[in-house]
Image (cartoon, rainbow, N blue to C red; front, side):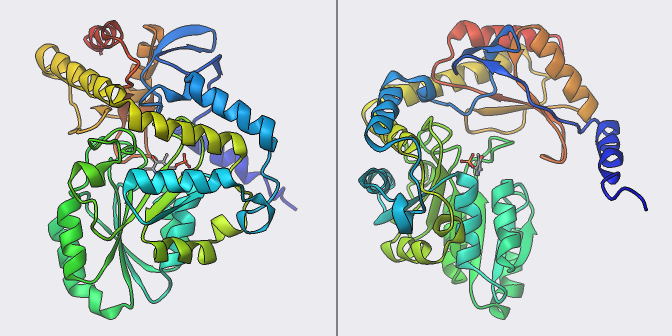
Length: 386
Ligand SMILES: *Cc1c(COP(=O)(O)O)cnc(C)c1O
């Protein structure tokens, strides 16, 4: 008999041949604008820590205090022995930031998406999903068993056409979109999506993973940025990006959240968020509320980089962006890998993003509030030679 596992090596060879192979790289020490990558100091343009909170002393102290008081593990699921007052405080703080009736925290953003989508829709329902949506949204859709149509990226007309043709054949309908597209950096046209959803009796789930703490006057995300607070929709996000911790959340009406507490399997059947992560996220929300200057610094950095590129590198192919995520388009995965390697040699960490994560290869740059002008200038000088 053949070894039933021998296909694994063949599969890996195929991945290598396509230049799609990935492996981990070790970061030594803490997070920040400058990090130590495998023994080399590099400027970090690859972090989701937009506000620099992952290394903030106040978050660390909050986490340490929570461990002292409650221990390291939460010891059970929320509905059994895992629930602490800390979780309730965090959920209230999220609901207050988002100005929704209630919120629920999951152990990761990924779990929030798969649990929420599979709880809200099933076999008799229609899901309209932007083709560039995050993997967690796509897998939530598969798990739900609903009928899915992936509409062309941000194409409102195509979305409307699908609704006209298909909506009446299904019980419920859910439109799903990233708010900031994580691998592109552009925004979804949220007001238009909400209008269409209203017209066709459809729910909307917006993934604010890269927008929470970053967009909106109070850092509440794209919903605030577009002036859509108060409209009925399902907002999810993560505690692991601008909030510098770990975990995910959904914010919305009290009936939505109550329903999820009863029906979202990835919340019911998993261990509650750890005390340390919960306390750190709570401290981060407090900072986001009280220190808008961090968000302003981040946006100053975004504008500075965009201006430098416009003035000095007009030939660079930059994907449209309205966020701290900026992508340089490249012809192939091989080109992207080479540029990524060249940048690393020049002490700049900005990774190549390749298929199957995205349809076309690119170098993805993310800015943080903690980058200094010299870091951004060095990046632009280095990009001259690609
Ligand atoms: C990172 C991310 C998630 C998943 O969040 P985690 O907390 O890291 O699991 C979901 N959606 C989008 C758009 C993301 O970028």
